[in-house]
Image (cartoon, rainbow, N blue to C red):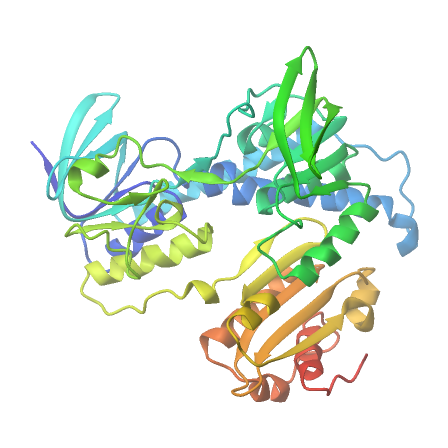
Length: 463
């Protein structure tokens, strides 16, 4: 006999579990179906464990700088297995926390593979057989996985995807990272810091290609200073695997060159997990592995929604979570606001960190906007100097006519935390005058946010 619910969520990643919990808070009877791990990719194989590993690399980097701070640290080394063990422990702790939240909010958890089976119906293959559930509303939140290009497929030994890189079978000596988006550059940063001779190949004309060009250029200089080799406008055409080495055929400037590596990480984007869900039979439209939705995540099929990575860019956990809340409130009869993609921050946790929100300078100009641009360097900030982090900059872009904050772009220490100040500013439709008149605490890195705004209007004080 089928179990009946008001809301069934398929997938327990950041968007899915948040949709389930918010739905339950609003009085809905909710079930969440998950085939692998509570918390999805983010908590188990993405956002959280990578940050734990990057933290270890950051501490290791700082230990090597001990003398600068009047400290002594000798015989420095690391235990890669212990670094990974800590990372997996952090992921396990948070994944377990999702189970507790489900229990607290009386969300029914069904472990198995779900498939749409008609209006308001879902079949689930569990280890005990197949069962059916029914619901007035269904939310698809199955996430995405690493894209695999022909000839570059990961094998877990010589060629890794993000999962392999999180539980590395060995420490790379000579590493090739294909792709310089957030995932690629974070792994490049981690392994480079621990001593791997790292080469990054990017098919676009610059690393971190979604970021403002000025920020990308600044970040590249720091990566090169740290010993990375950066190859832009380049493409890996083929990988020859033999024994313990990989020969990469890299096309750059119209010529193909070969280089040998012992490890390759493929980070060339993601594809949505659309298979086996019965989407086509249900009449749900899919474009390049992502479900097509409107601004409220409605699929066009009554009662069915799609959120998170499955529903397309930006592929960010915080975007998925917010969509989860929005959809649950919509289903419960509330009147939530649609999410504005342009006000969602992007954060990359390499060294130095990179963060941004809104339009780049180039995008603002493409739209024909009359703009004012402000910049402030970390070297002009007292707290940055005291921290020993003088390398970085903050850039702000304003509409010259209205004073609207169009975009903010940062590179440097802790900018993934700082960016939220500008995110709130955009959400509240703050003008340059509001930001100028705000008193920022001293000594803090956030003072640079103030100075960057002042600089856009020729009023910077400390540089």
